[in-house]
Amino acid sequence: AQSVTQLDSHVSVSEGTPVLLRCNYSSSYSPSLFWYVQHPNKGLQLLLKYTSAATLVKGINGFEAEFKKSETSFHLTKPSAHMSDAAEYFCVVSDRNRGSTLGRLYFGRGTQLTVWP
Amino acid sequence: NAGVTQTPKFQVLKTGQSMTLQCAQDMNHNSMYWYRQDPGMGLRLIYYSASEGTTDKGEVPNGYNVSRLNKREFSLRLESAAPSQTSVYFCATTRFSGTGGETQYFGPGTRLLVL
Image 1 (cartoon, rainbow over the protein chains, first blue to last red):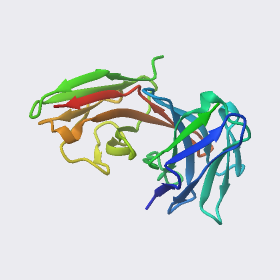
Image 2: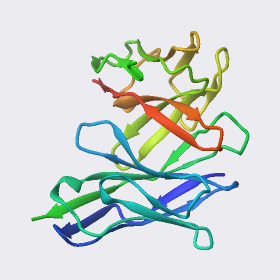
Image 3: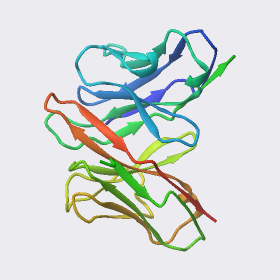
Image 4: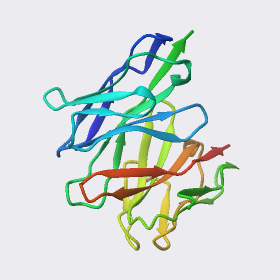
């Protein structure tokens, strides 16, 4: 079975300081993993995804995440936070088995990122 | 090319009323999904459809029904709305690439309030 645990429900940082949002996953297969961002009253935007290529994945807006199989982690980082990064972030795992054309998503409960000026 | 569209954007219902949320995609994808989003819960899968003519229950199907009318459209029906169904509903579809990757496309969401 697939599941995702986001270890922090809220993270607060000062503008210009690093961001770390933590995510652990459980998956029966070699997983596909994603990070999505949602700004208030907006839809979901894909930040980045891991699908068994390079373990360090670069996404949009300076975010990146590292897939660590031994730790079953997929933490999201950014070297320097910006005010516009304030939003809710979701770590997501897909249950798609290779060769299947069905991929259900399992979402973490979200991490609310606050950026102080 | 509109991607994934949902109607309506907002809806207020009284307990016991029924309604249908509509979703359509113009990307020719086989699989479609309905999720609900509640504060502190992330998104949870209600129903999904692997292809035209097939539907299956997800994590939280109780109180809902779905119809995969054709390849483009996947509707979600609340037969007798309850306050616990107050939520934001997202429709999604998935594109699978030849290298084994996948990309999901989400609709803009429908905000439902049940009084």
